[in-house]
Image 1 (tube, rainbow, N blue to C red):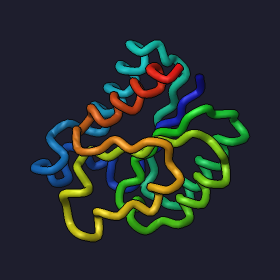
Image 2: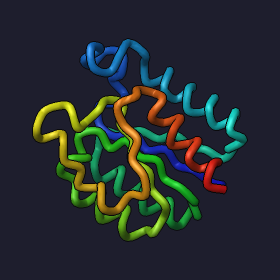
Image 3: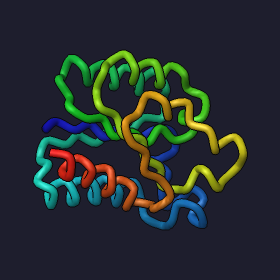
Image 4: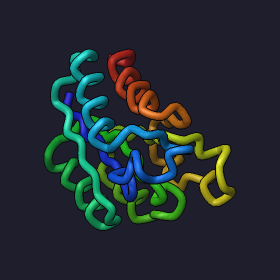
Amino acid sequence: MKILVINGPNLNMLGIREPEIYGNKTYKDLEKYIYDVSKKCNLLNVEVFQSNHEGVIVDKIQEAYFDRVDVIIINPGALTHYSYSVRDAIASVNIKTIEVHLSDITKRDDFRKKSVLEEVVSLRFYGKGFLSYEEALHSLINKN
């Protein structure tokens, strides 16, 4: 199974940005965590990608189609709440997509409570820090 993990804007600032919300662990820690969990789950074909640019993320989602990616796990960051271009890219590739968030977006600012991706993703995991990614990966082995 080929898995692409996409992380959106400001995820590269983990450990610096709002540690009271996102904790003190860095983006490098998150990458290592994802790869370690993937290995434990015997999901060995995993790529982790991060960009602060909406168009680059759209390009990456579209490339996933041509690269025959089986599953996309995406933490779109703030793009969650307004990026119809990311939403449309996900809808257009017809690849199972799982949305993840470190924080519980339903208990934050009003503008963060709505995900424009909600209707085009298969599953959503949020509010558990790095464990949100682990739950997304585990959902793949539990269904196969």
